[in-house]
Image 1 (cartoon, helix red, strand yellow):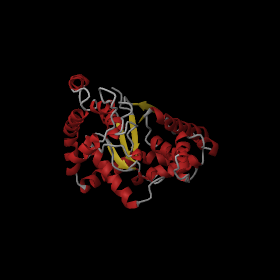
Image 2 (tube, rainbow, N blue to C red):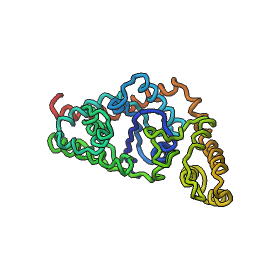
Image 3 (cartoon, rainbow, N blue to C red):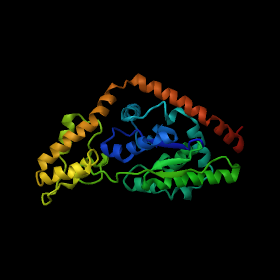
Image 4 (cartoon, rainbow, N blue to C red):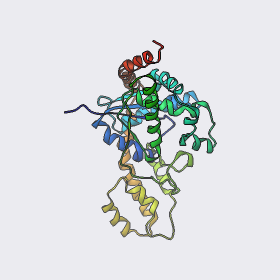
Length: 313
């Protein structure tokens, strides 16, 4: 039986998660990661391109680790670590910066999109794809789970590997994207895509009262028998067969249907919320320290080979 393929995914600690994050990205990863030799990276250096509050970054990083543990991630089955605890990431990113060209980096969709939305065009944001390439290539990663809109990130990593290998020898494996099955776009309370920047989220660890307030605020179309935004969220936590009956029997009764959604969401999220609140900072620290040691052990030989190849060793 062949060894498992290596999977790596990275998440920015950019704040509290909402149910759109959970169903769109977190749950698909949790359903798949045991089938691979998996690495889960908390991308705190990536977060510096937009987050400038050190206390917020520290708290976000701890809480992101807590979120994954609460949602069912098992640190005995895979490696979870902070990007900043493995200095080889930034070292390799600099080497890649010296291999690729400015016109190549200027093609990045994510950079152009973020600048168009008013985000500061700092150099870190511009060279972000090469830090991401380093994250991926250091681990001889076979697959990287991404959404369809993030496919270009993996293309950049493959191109960085190709350019380095052509110049210094065949050291890097070319990874492939793993487009995980997704629930599609999770609508927010206003019907648009759920996003913190739109202020339309249902927090993943909301209290019962916060959950009630968010659900009661979901926009409904008064001309429709079935409130589609309510239904789209409801089917994430309950079978469509049961929902068809519920929504048919309560056609047009939006308050009743929202109350049913509150009950079902709370039942689904409560165990995760209780687990989240029970995990101490000390436990997170131990898990991340152990994960960093495993990650450093994994990339040490690879980075030594890179240093020799480019001539700094």
